[in-house]
Length: 244
Image (cartoon, rainbow, N blue to C red; front, side, top):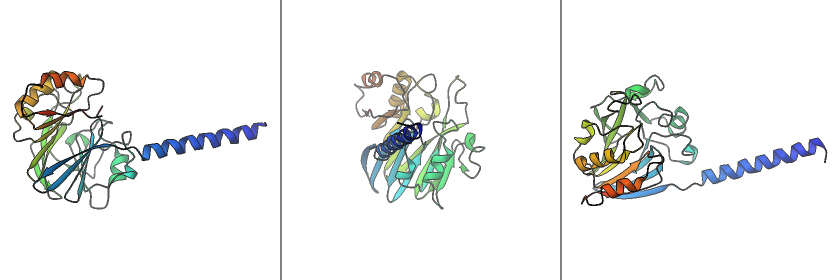
């Protein structure tokens, strides 16, 4: 076999391998949970790490869309995109562009403004109604560690009919999130030293008392620790999903 033929065979095999990988990637099925609300069904697509998608009343909301977790060309375009902070595993301009349409509202924390100058900044404590959905920006930060300074990042509380959903972003068990009330569904991060230890997530859960708690952004943290800590807490259902 001459060198030219070897190269052609190699390129053909590589192209086939890439095509198969792309096909498998495009066909990846994400976990979905559906909740009933007073305004109809809320479908939550659990994409991975800190990345989520909500579908409600004909609207689509992407939270921290990141290309390494999904092929956004295959997902619905957004009416609203929420970005919690500027770190690469939460802010991805390529994914934002892929999922945006002409009238998409891109909402970001103050730390994202320099990376996304055309986005709209929500400051900690601010509330807006966008695409018919009430959105509250909640402080997200570390107590002492330098990874997430105070005022840089947002968590978001979204109201879907009679259900309030809290997506915490990267934070520890700070007073502002422990003070939140009437949270039906909470996504709380769990990977120290960047966010929370299981003990801190349990602390927030006992204060906030969400009806459904998803630990997310947990990396290699043993989620069974949290399950055991909250097993006797009536009214809090801990759901473990593939959200490393």
